[in-house]
Image (cartoon, rainbow, N blue to C red; front, side, top):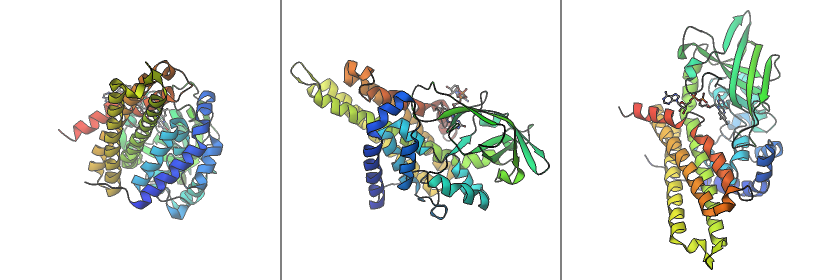
Length: 379
Ligand SMILES: Cc1cc2nc3c(=O)[nH]c(=O)nc-3n(C[C@H](O)[C@H](O)[C@H](O)COP(=O)(O)OP(=O)(O)OC[C@H]3O[C@@H](n4cnc5c(N)ncnc54)[C@H](O)[C@@H]3O)c2cc1C
């Protein structure tokens, strides 16, 4: 399997890089400190087609291939993972609508999300069920022409800013993965009650919430795809989502490396730049090698997702997410070390990359779950 960047890929990467350096870098620290959602930046990014680049052109999106999407994510996270996360997640759940939604759902929501006028969320995890998606307990019961949804969703990105959510709920409670259905739920529906989680370690500009669903009524036509097939539908996007997280990790690691190189060239000790010390040079060499290895695996995973063989995509996306996320945290840690005491305070971005990179080992399946997936494909 091979991958290479076309001229179009390089042009997209350059355009996102320029946008991110101009619009994101100058305000990154402030957004982190205030835990402020970057509404204005998200809207501007939408004008450049950088929000939900997966949405097809006929629904107002950019219709980018997987490798282009990865480049967008990587560059946003390189500039700042917190704002990158907020902008990059604005279309969470839209893959499900694009692939399995009815035409009216696509017409109503996809153009608005691509234009930056609406935000979506994907509500899968629950307080008692994270890694074990099949165990979810949120219940959707048929009542005439409607479904009534009850339960609690946990750790939902965009929970308080989303206009619409793709909610996974049990329609056949006796079943595990065979009894789950995806529902399109506008967030202004009565009984949809998000509560902001604002004590995060990192990606503090990104919105996160717990959502109580209290007798939330939606028309039966709001079922996305087929009843009881939601888990299988979801599985089709795991490889794509994990490749995105791998790209987040690559971006954060590259940002941490950039900051460390810059600092090593400025800081002097013993009458010379610390960049002249072999200990620092070797650390930088190791960091750069980790970033490139993670990038190669991530682009390879993106190519596998694009090629469409689900088994190959599952293996490479899990490998890419595992490797890129674990190394991103290590690279960011080394970045702090190169900054010395200055790396331990918010005056420099080094500590922010460290805090922000940490999430990539947890969401879209923890590192332990990725190892299970990879091992299942070896044994
Ligand atoms: C900032 C943030 C944003 C998020 N955004 C979303 C979102 O938008 N939508 C959404 O639905 N969810 C979201 N999540 C939830 C995220 O996907 C879960 O936190 C993650 O899947 C882990 O689930 P958990 O927290 O319940 O941990 P648990 O599943 O309880 O895991 C705890 C520990 O046990 C380990 N473990 C569990 N099962 C196994 C196993 N079989 N083998 C080995 N080890 C195992 C885990 O690796 C972990 O170390 C988000 C989480 C965070 C923190």
